[in-house]
Every structure is written in C-alpha cells, then in structure tokens.
Image (cartoon, rainbow, N blue to C red; front, side, top):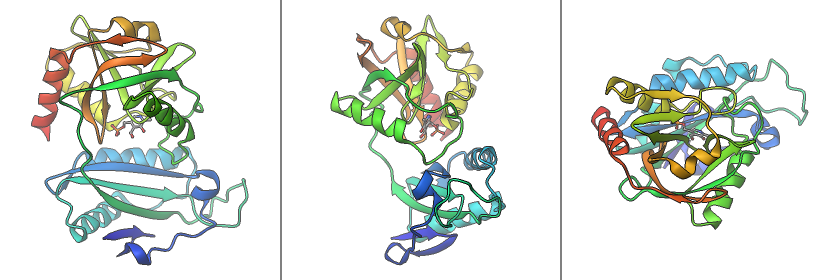
Length: 273
Ligand code: PLP
C-alpha cells in the first residue's frame, strides 16, 4: 500500500511525518476527501476549489496547482489499484519549531492516502443524535482541527446513533461529518452556506439535482424543534452520499420513514455517478 508523502508516492512504511508539522501542533492544516467511483474521482474540481479556498482563508502559502494535485491523485489511485473507494489529501501549513505565530514563508506539506469504499446505510437509514454545536465560528474552512466534530460523533455513537446533528443556540447547523436536509410538504430545507457549516460538495450536488427535478430548496436556518415533525430527513456527504435519517434521539425524539423525496434524490445521485 502506497501513500502520498510530501507529494511523493512511497510505500506506507517509508513515509516520514515530521514531529514539528503544524497540523500536529495546532491542527493547522486543511484537507479533502474525494470519492472514487470506477477509478474516477467524483467532483474532483469542486474539491480542489474548496481546498484552495480553505487554504486561502487560513492565509496559507499554498502554490501547488489543481493539475499537480490531480496528477498525484491519479498516480496514487493507480498505484493502489483503487476502483471504488476514496482518497484523502491533507495540506499542512508546514513544519517549523512550535510557535503559535505562523510565518507566511512556511512550505506546505501535502500528504494523502486511499481508502476502501465505506459501508452504506442508504437502504435502511440511520438514527441521529441531536446535540449542541460546540465548534468554532469558521466551520466553512475544512481544517483538520476537528475536535468539536470528533466529540459529537463519539457522543452519538455512545447513544447508538451513526451521526450527530448539531444546533447552535437552537438553530440546526449540520452533522458532525455531513450536511442535513429536512423535507416538509415536498420542500427541502437546509442551513445556508455561511461560516457556521461546511458547504458540502454533496450538499451542492443534491441542491442542484433537487432544483433541476422541480423541487423547491430553501436554504435557511431552522430551529431544532422542527426536527420532530419533519416528513423526511437525510444527511449528505462524500462518503455517505444521500443517507436517510429514520430516527432522532437526544434533545429531540422523533421517528420518520424513508420518504419519496429522499428516495428520488438517492436515485438521481446514483444516476449522476
Ligand atoms: N459537514 C462537515 C462538518 C463535514 O465534515 C463534511 C464532510 O466530511 C460535510 C459537511 C460534507 O461535505 P462533503 O459533501 O463535501 O463531503
């Protein structure tokens, strides 16, 4: 198995990660996870765009081009013979003696690895744990600093839930590693792409699919109490695609079927793939 180590493809056992990498000290790095279907990365350009935006928002000195990233990605996928799976690409700001103050001259360190396709819960749906969003105010940046997400995911798993659905002061934001959609009377509702959520690539694809299919999509924040009378609910992400929620637990208790709108969007998503 090979990995990407500072843009070089090397056997995993030969990879060298520096102890003064800023992503270890401060979570000072950004990343992307890209799904691979039939040897082809899905929505690759959109992922690179977001990676560049994340790096720019953090004032990182990131000069690698999308073409170079694509080449490294394709080479690694081929080397590991990934047919269906995913690739993780991380950009650390750089490596230097620990200091909160970063230098704009840091040289970014790009690492990556491939993963097999994750098990799908799209047929049966998942239970979701409703809890407080305790993250910072720049959730639009896809950084490796994910403790608020990690803690929420553990809390959800301890309650036998596959995802945590977060709210900030009563307004629902997103999942710990996904975006949330509700369906009521055939209309889709999801949090707008502000600093309080990560604007998921899958979210954007699903909004386009839904709009093109004639559904109304309302991008507005809604209170968590709305969750208990939603007709349908689902999460979206690169790895979970369109996964129905059949039960809310925690601060909201509700059950819902896997409805026609969710099924339609799952079908449209499969078609697009
Ligand atoms: N929101 C958060 C917090 C995430 O971590 C993720 C993905 O991991 C998403 C949303 C979904 O984004 P995407 O559809 O680009 O995978």
